[in-house]
Image 1 (cartoon, rainbow, N blue to C red):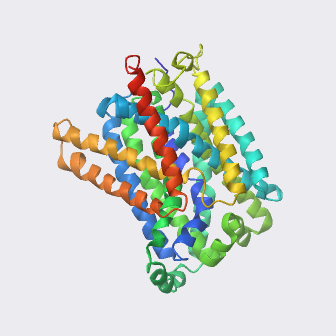
Image 2 (cartoon, rainbow, N blue to C red):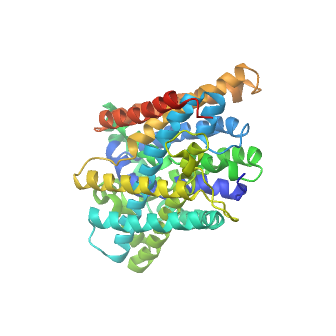
Length: 445
């Protein structure tokens, strides 16, 4: 049995730390592009997308308080849906969702590190820097689970500094009232077509990651109490911080400038407020913030192959489920597998970015993951029908709202130009997981 390393604070900071601090910095321009430069429409889309994760996390918390075995959503699927679904979900998480997220966010770290040192921005340089970030964080979290948790707590509070500074100063020194008043025409123009719904894809990225924390649920102290609390509190914190930042930077820099400057808009806003030196300091906070996000993803991912292996759900399970001896008791082979998969997707991301493809390799996987969550939300409704969950609000209303939110996120991704290709890949991996279960069901437990 694994030692429980993490308390309630780490559970909350892991969820908020994974979500806050990466997507919002480099997706704000994408959101504004899709909403035609309308900040008001961007705020509305943000709230709708946040609706999905708030009610989604409240629904998942009902499952989290009923089991604390390793595996996160794999365990929830196994206990409340079926072993075949659990195997399919596990393959999707391990082969697509988690490594793609680790790869993309580490690549984003490379973008901001290159900005800090004034290096010429190229996809190759971003990828190389991202590679070293991945190596460092996999080593840290593999050598010491406690050190990884401490790092997660620290970066969570550090990453709030640039977000809140830009938010507050943008609201004070910018012109939010005038910006909103002048936004009416952009809002009207953007809503003439359904193109603005594509903004759900980058926003889903910005708000995603909360589900990753379920992979360490079994390592949280008093997890049946603390983990549901963390799943409830964290999304509300995330929504408030994101809305403040989005309005603040739009007011300070202007929507047209954000769309034109793209990923450089954070540095530009910081320069206007603090000058060159101050902007460098803010950029350092941003880098720590994004690294904190990668750390949270890595912290969760290194345990996922192990969680599948202890059930016999993947080839080579006997080696994969081996725990190293000592206080750390880390599944080393699982961590190595997670690293290699992340490295593979980092290479794929490099190829797609070099070819100038729109979006990144994680966006559609994120959106498809919300379909997987729907299966778990329905499981909560089934528990309510069996009277294992008391109350209409917790057993029916909340999961139904979560289902609606998930389909809204998915609807936005349908307009993504690469949607058909990514969907085929996602469905192929899910099918492969289900097929593996069928062929090996006697050895899976």
